[in-house]
Every structure is written in C-alpha cells, then in structure tokens.
Image (cartoon, rainbow, N blue to C red):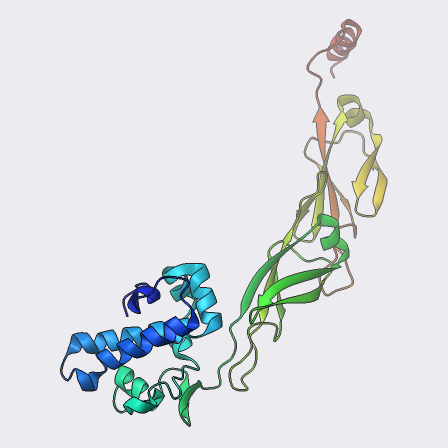
Length: 302
C-alpha cells in the first residue's frame, strides 16, 4: 500500500484516544466494506487501507513505534506481515456479520489460508514459527583492554524493555571484530529460536604503540652519534619499559624485534612480537664547536 498517514486514513489527528480510533475504524470499515460497494475498486482499496491503519493504531506497541518514527521510519522497521501479526477485530462487527476472517479474506483474497509468516488459528491469524531478528551493536574498549581482555556491560532494548548483558571481551581482540551472542536477539515466534546479538568491538588507539595484526610497532629516534657508536634505549611495551641495545652503525628505519611482546593471539597462548623502528634525529642547528668537530670528521673520511 502507498505510504500515507494512518491517522488521516481514519479521519483522526495524532494523539487520538483508543476509543476514538476504534469508533472511526468501525464506521469506515462498514462504509467501505466490499459487500456494500460491489465492483468498486476504490472502496476495496480504501477498505484495505483503513484495516492496515487500525492494525497499527489499535496495537499499543506498534502505535508507539509509529508515533515515534513516523510513516517512513515505521515502514522500514515493520513489514506487512509484522503489521497484521496478531490483528483481531473480535466482536467489533458482530452485528454486521463479518469478523477477522472476513477482513483478511477481503484484503488478501477469498481463498486466503494464511500469507507470509501467518497461519490461521481459530478466529485470528497468528505468525508461523519464525526465528527472531538479529540485533547489531557496537562497544568501545581501550588499547589495553583489548590487550588484556575485559568484561563490558551493555544495555539494549528488547521487546520494548531495557536488557543488560555482561560480555567478555577476549584478550587480543582486533578492531572491528564481531562477537556473536547466541539467542540474545529478538524473541522467536511460536517456539522458533531467538535471534542473535552481534557486537562489533571498536578498539581505541595508544599514543605510543601502534598495532599491526598481533604485532606492536613503536618508533624511537636516536642521536647521530648513538647510531654510529651504539647505545642503550628505553622503549615502552605492554609489560612496562624495557631497555634494549642499539648496535653501532644502525641504519635509519631498521626494526629491532622483541619476540613475544606483542598482542596475545586470540584464543591461543602465544603472543605476537614488538618491533622498535629506529629513526635518526638529525639536528637542524649546530653550535660552533659541534660544526668544527664534524668538519674534522669529514677531513678524516667520516
């Protein structure tokens, strides 16, 4: 059906009471019932529209969603199957000789015996067993929480109520990795299994350490003389500061490997490595004595 305002379909304004909605629907349903308008396609379409409007506005949860998101947003979240799930006019038209079965057959055809996910049960139409919808969420962890593993408490809405979960984030998890929480999605229909909750983990950055897979990269600059003569250097790691030796004659961009000081392999017992990338800090300005010394070195072939 074409998108339009459900309240307007029933000749009402937003905020109308449940009693006003019921009265307006009953009046229009009788007016546009196909038996009163044989062969009138316009009346038949109007009959379908007002029943769709009433199926939404007579259901407190669906009405709340419609009022919150509007027509376009509501239709992105609810299919026609969802709209008519549990729809039942009861004895509303007992004096007129038609009921829920009649309405569904008029909307979906005289031979109607269920559509989409519906099956007939007595005087109303209920959904066939169907797995619940999956939920998708994100949570953020720090660089160190991703390294050590942690537990995060998350909150989300399920069936109109706020749910809370404690989720274990495994050590070594990578940025944008997705965890699957079985059965934590929308409830299944008529005994079908629940959907799942997929949690995407966003890992924060560290000001000194850069992650590459399960390895860690740290960049450090040394002085020209240290590069020539060798030196000792303190480097940050996830286990604290570690002193390493810089070999004499090291070249710019050289990486020194510290085995087993990287991130844990998720689900395993070993770890990646840490690499120290060495840069050479070339001074932009020299003092007079420094320049003289360097000029002497040039003369000596260095």
